[in-house]
Length: 63
Image (cartoon, rainbow, N blue to C red):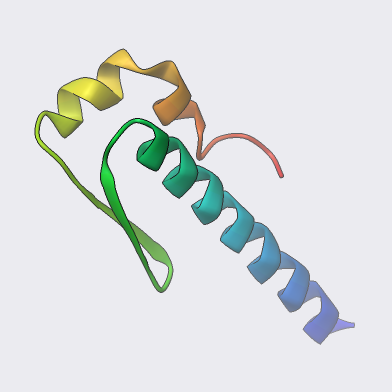
C-alpha cells in the first residue's frame, strides 16, 4: 500500500514538473528538468514570469 502511494505521489510530482517545463518552453525559455528541480534560464526571465499569469500558475494547478 505504501509503495503504491509513493508511486502515485512521484507520478503527480513528475506531471507537475512537466507542466511547468511545458509552460516555460512555450514562453521561449530554456528549461532542464534536473531530478526534482526545474532549472530555467533566459534573458528577462523574472520580468516575463511576473507578466505572464500562465507561467506563474503552471506549477499551482492540481493534476
